[in-house]
Image: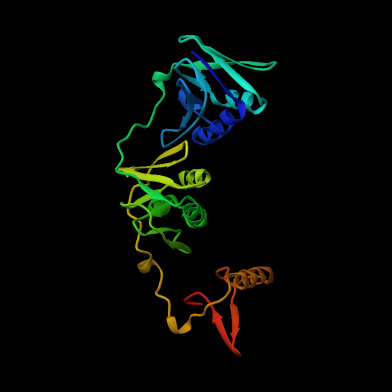
Length: 287
């Protein structure tokens, strides 16, 4: 197997694929990146068996597939800026990479033992990458870290809404999402948000989601369970005691309240807004 490619393009693809590589692999192949070389392109794939990320980049050479040690491959690509040449003979324990005066012999494994997540997905829908990225990044901090409430430990995607809640706070955005309901794990949410720089193709299967943006593809298992109806989790808002306020002013008020201190009972600060001379207190129900 011989393959030639530019280091910057390969480095970007590696950085995407490495997001799915576990740092403490108990299975040897989970500490590797699968490299597939075609006649005019190559692809890096990483997986931890719960999430898989693959990214393509321009390349030339003889078709072939090999698993390369992820940390050593990443270290070599990080110090290269020119053309990289890879050579590997099937069955050999090492692959050779050269770039200018740099050379490295990287541990290699046969590709047939790499656990590729091969699933059948429904027809893809097109998502606005910029809108999705903003919504996913905003929803992620509200996902629960409580292992006893696994159905809240992710971001919920539904046909018309993206939402998350830890039972105390919640985020909800009305966005055309996917045809089915899915709860995406936090690590996959962060990875998907990171690759969204344009329109994306999103599809689901039973228990998994697939998102493709450009030459990068993320496949992730979903969280089991049903996301709760937030209207039942949180009391309905009293419209007679609501007010519109600039988000900048609200942030300033919250930061000021945090600076002054909070009640020892529940860590809650009372904020008062003066509207047309009338004070409107904003407090949590029950305080």
